[in-house]
Image 1: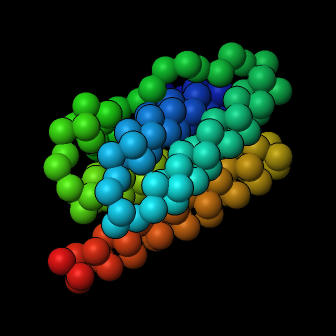
Image 2: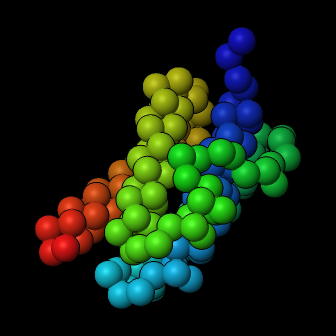
Length: 144
């Protein structure tokens, strides 16, 4: 059975909540490879996405979820990683998974123009974040 638009948007909220938490954990443990403020900017992006998606869920008559979804690397795993390189790779896995989730949501293209524009905008921002992390991982690997 196809999920409803509200269920799909709530799924994205849950994924962004998990990504936000992962970014917060990584930022608190970074030691200089990437400035902490850059990882905190990623976290802030996730918070903005949660707010925007929650607004859309409300407009559609739903209740935004407070759940967190499972991503590739969870908070506990991130805490156990011993290097910035590993933390960056873990964040990249999560961000890539989230980018794919946005792409899948767009393929099921909501028939509401405002929601579709929101998802497209968030997808573009998510791709940019994933690309930035990919470049940092490659840059750090080359210098190691």
